[in-house]
Length: 217
Image 1 (cartoon, rainbow, N blue to C red):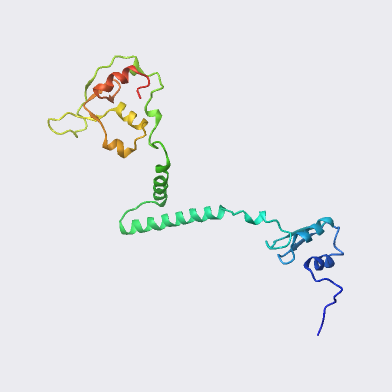
Image 2 (cartoon, rainbow, N blue to C red):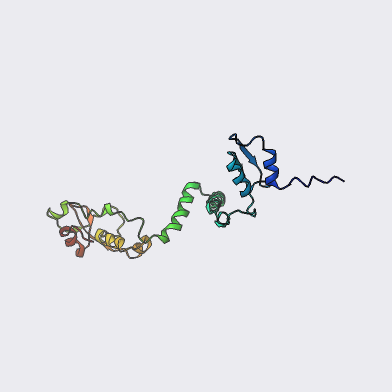
């Protein structure tokens, strides 16, 4: 039976320092695994002008606990988006196969993202303030305008009925109030009058407001 020399320590720190005795103080770099790496060895190498590189076990004596309590969420985010993309691709394939539709994966994914975001947005995504033109010096405030019936050019009006269209002022006010597209559709106000100069459909109550106020909202 062989018994090791008890005069020599078999601790990882002592073994490493003994093997590198002739290579210390020369600016070398030592790469080791997690069995030998520990804060005590790192401090010893630092004083010997030798860099130490390697992985470390979190249960090593002297390791700070703050390094292992933090949870990394980057991988969780990558996993979420990977699963979302995977599900959208599979759903698009099944939808095109069984429903006889040809929908691109990008369009389907954009629709999913919009459905997830819209309930969290406090205002209407379809609202475009440039459509209102309320801050511009428009001719509607200077020229002479007369109210007239909407021309029957689309052929959608039934026989004996007047052509109707949505009032612009009422529509803009509904958008500004934060109503969704479905709510505006259900409460849509149709009018048979318009301004032939501005080419805008306006109800009788909103005709004067549209042509006298810069901000008619």
